[in-house]
Image 1 (tube, one colour):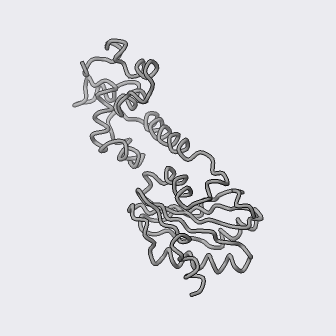
Image 2: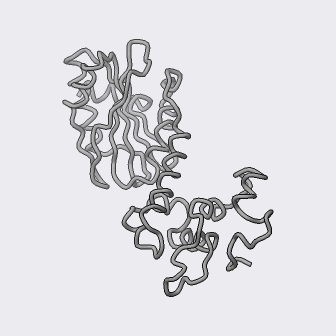
Image 3: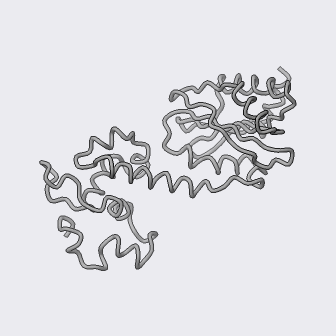
Amino acid sequence: MSSERIKNWPTKERPRERLLAEGPERLTDADLLAIILRVGLGTFKKGVFGKNAHDSALSILRDFRGLRGLNRAHIHDLLKVPGLGPAKVAQIKAAFELGKRVCAGKLTAPAFESSAAIAAHFHPRFTGKRQEIVIAVFLNGQNQRLGEKDITEGTPTQATVYVRRVIEEALHLSAAAVVLVHNHPSGNPEPSTGDDETTRDLLKACKLVQLVLLDHVIVGESDHYSYSDAGRLQELESE
């Protein structure tokens, strides 16, 4: 049945109708992707003739090794898939981004009660990224969020943090404190020598303008590292 056009399937077996009747939780990854694709890919291309949206979804997930691989895939790699044009690639990337934003939600004051909560908030934003992204979060005297700013996006192994940009934005917002957050695409959150140097430089700069660096949180694949929890902020400040 899988090679038949989906509209010829029994109504209760069609992905879209099943989602509406049973809820999205009951559908497989291929079912959900098929709904986004709507129609099969490359119907008139050699080697994929006759594939419906569900078959196409299964093929894409196999080629990119599941949803995680599909999320990490570059746009130009997706465009190489026969029949997967700009419109469908945009739909797939938009769906992933919406999911990340739902997971992230709004960062409110209680989120700063622990480094784990901060890491949990930013983890969806870092998922699938192949480069380091450094974000500064600015707080008032009650540790309430005033704003956040992407400071830089670096190479897969290193991101250069512009301390001046952090300080300028903090002064612009009249912030009292800042939390630095960045990811390690390798998945290992242990800090590098470069991370230590960045934290030390930022500590010194913050002290000059009476700004408090509350923490530097590194987000990995399934864990995080907190300079504050590890007592490293005090060590670096005294060096």
